[in-house]
Image (cartoon, rainbow, N blue to C red; front, side, top):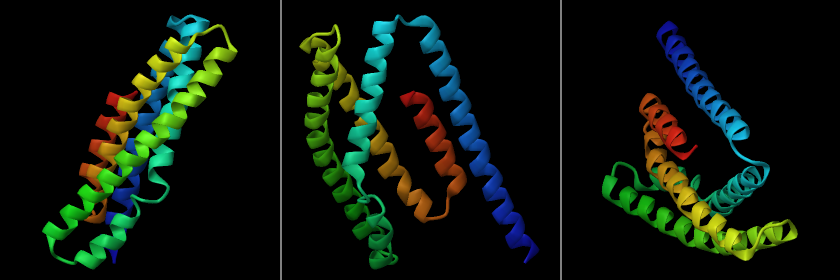
Length: 166
């Protein structure tokens, strides 16, 4: 019983520590961006971050959580589960492109309402799509670690991915 409590406490500490490191890194990056960019450039960054967040959210909509169910169905067969992971990644990639198209419209409307032109909207979408793809890919590739209760390795991967994406 005590060993199980220690394990849960360690997991809790690792989770909080990794999230705190990621949050601190993102805050420091945001402060540096705010201080170093002009107002127009910061507006572009804000629109890209909003578009990327929309694309990632639109491409998921619970699809990644289906992997838990598929893992239970696959049982100990790693080959069938690996094909499930690749199918979910393929589905999320398709949804990413649909979300990217919608995001292009958002960028065009948001930027043309200001002092920006359509080229800026295209540049924002070109930046947002690869950012969203890296986030989606890292999430899908890390999800099997979560299902295998390999949380320390998962948190290290999330931290390195978040540092790379920020």
